[in-house]
Length: 111
Image (cartoon, rainbow, N blue to C red; front, side):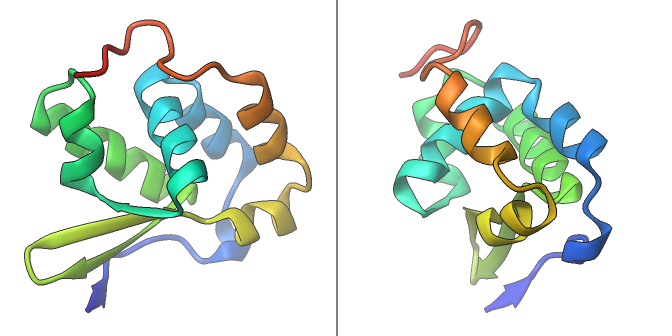
């Protein structure tokens, strides 16, 4: 298993987190991860009506903002929320976003 390049916890900036969460597709990914803990990129992307290359972009934005943590096992990329890091840096932010969001955000169609 290897990890993909992602920011250290102390480097996560609120503006980057909020920008990442402002997109309906990325918010849907975060909502799903909040419920499942960890999933493969293919499992999440397969349930949303979004092209694979577009999903790759969304995963990268979430990872680079410090919202998710990605590990690679063979050909599978596993994604999980960085809940502990986000709660430590910005107490209550993630819970507020998750509690205020509606599943299947506008513009996102589930397959």
